[in-house]
Image (cartoon, rainbow over all chains, first blue to last red; front, side, top):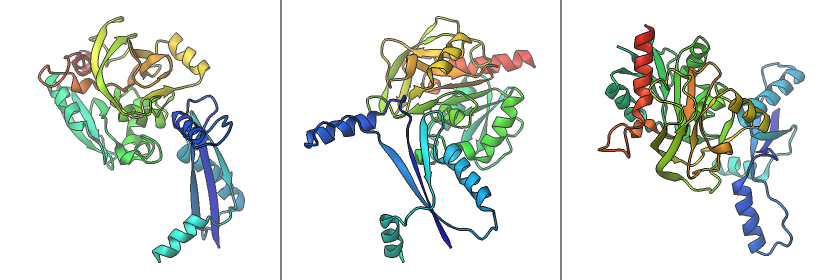
Length: 99
Length: 225
């Protein structure tokens, strides 16, 4: 069975996000009223086939560890793991287009 | 002769200049390869500037997982002197040998210019030939040089002299407290955003102020050995 995990990463509240600030100005300029703040982050859409026999708990811990230590930097970033995730439309389009 | 390893990652740019600086300071540069855990029994290691692995994920993040860095981390704990310049500094922060992290410049622009700096601390084999309060002119060239760390940790660094180098006159990237370089508590691991290897010869740089990092390590190790 294909497992789908989404990991979202964004800068901590206390860390300056100059990209978010630039996007905020652009949104305001394009007419979105009353924009209060924008934080720019990134998302990882991960698909894997688990045939290792690892327990659900081991996998949970592993994914949490990878999200914390590899996909994000705990000094400056927060993260959220969403698992299971719905198939992401863009990933599916890409995979089908590739085949 | 003091043997100083210079690591090449895919995307390193300044490994050749760093090796040249080591030679000019009287040491013997030794090429090290990212995918080889063997650091050839060198006396010190430099992680040079550039864009290792294209800066994908975060600057320095993927390089921090390489076999050579794994060895460097182990040896650094045993006292091996390690200098990270620019991307090398980012790698040392990512792997946890130095505190803090480097993020996008506050102005969102890549900044390349000759930068005035002040030496704040010299308790390191890489800093033997400088003095506290000395002012330097060394080029900076980075897009992700904004030093970030929590307030509490920053005050701890300041208290213990670990902020060894600061931007003066103008802060090029929004770094907290104008931090340009930090060292670890022992002083053997040092990281800075400016490029001392580009300031060793007046023919090609704004000054020779950067040569001191390389002559310091050569002198420190000769005198220690």
